[in-house]
Image (tube, rainbow over all chains, first blue to last red; front, side, top):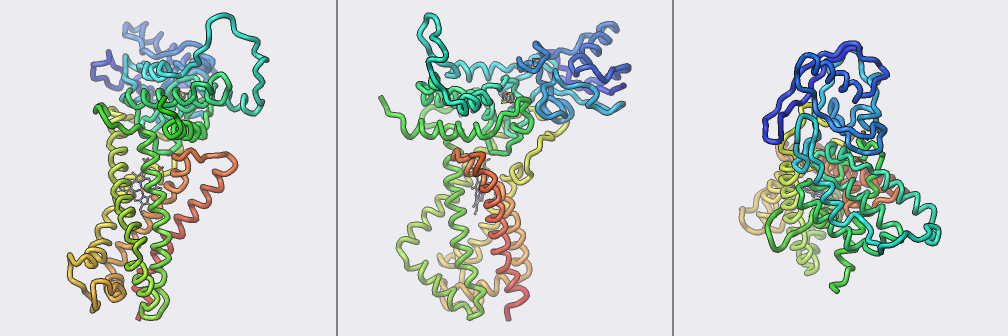
Length: 250
Length: 223
Ligand code: HEM
Ligand code: SF4
Ligand code: FES
């Protein structure tokens, strides 16, 4: 296969950046999208240029680091698929592929296609955890949990923190990510204890780091590689409301 | 959002926005019901009675203030949210987003602005006359005698078209707004959401078509 690539190149966070064109021949249909970029970089290195920087780690859809905005869709054209699990056979031979970094005030470009997603970290640090006593964990089966609830908590917990929801949202809102994290813990007995505090702190941090406001357009759900449902956004809306209305001052 | 002191969270913006919008949606039902009396073919007798009731009822007086507050709050928050969201992506994409979202949801501010402009025209036609800011017209006996003013306004094809086009955009706004308000209040449930969306679409169509019938009637049928 052969492709024309239009790739965003930017030296550093303060540089201006521009699109760079490449033609890549002899691409195999079985290559993953990242392998295709590796292949391109090899070609660039051999001709003495600077390789395209992009983020990746697990290459099996679980770490969330590989987000690229491909032809107008975060993680490319295949639904429920991360960039690393996308294959070149999904693209038309001889077509042009435009590759851009996530665009959002809260995710600034560090270099080329790599963006700073520490805004997500800050939201998690604000409350996305469960406080437990030190010492060894108790026997997990001591706490009975309804199967439906544990399944649902798991549906939220599969979020890999990739940021595609922010990239896909016309408002750059992080509601899908934050709501997945809030809901996952609010549903389980260990997390329920701090649920009200948690949702308030995480939402406050989400606003502070510069994400947009949700307007329920649901582009996030469409482009989330893990199929996180916007029902979790509704759940967070309930959690936050009850925290604001019901929480006592003491 | 860096100001100290009173700060509304993003979610609270949405609750207030949705509450004001929900109130406006209820108002639209009552407004449409009253206005359909214009079609009774009785020279406006039933309509006048309804207006008389609304103008003299003290509860309605209070509701009218709530209505104004609702509009103002809804519009101001809508603009604040829109401006904030525009700032949230300072560098845009070269290839526009292809995510599958409904056009109604993407153009809420645009349909909203069209409704706002219509609102000003509509207030100029009737409400400001009632307040005495503009003289009565169409042979109306008093500033509360709306029927003759309605006839003159809606028999004018320019106004009739402005009204109908605005109602279509109002329908677009409501198509997204109805279910969006449920989502904002956290009332999204896999069992009920499909039904909520259907009811919202029906509501949007009924409001847009229902209001549009009135100018059409005065333009083509009323003698
Ligand atoms: C009778 C008139 C109107 C009704 C019944 C109405 C109703 C609603 C409702 C129920 C929502 C959903 C709220 C939510 O997302 O939770 C909404 C959203 C919205 N409305 Fe209106 N609205 C009206 C007029 C206007 C006007 C005049 C504007 C002027 C700017 C406007 C701007 C907006 C915007 C921008 C949104 C989207 C808010 C967001 O992004 O979250 N609306 N409307
Ligand atoms: S909700 Fe989906 S799109 Fe957003 S960070 Fe999690 S996995 Fe990625
Ligand atoms: S590289 Fe880990 S999810 Fe793609």
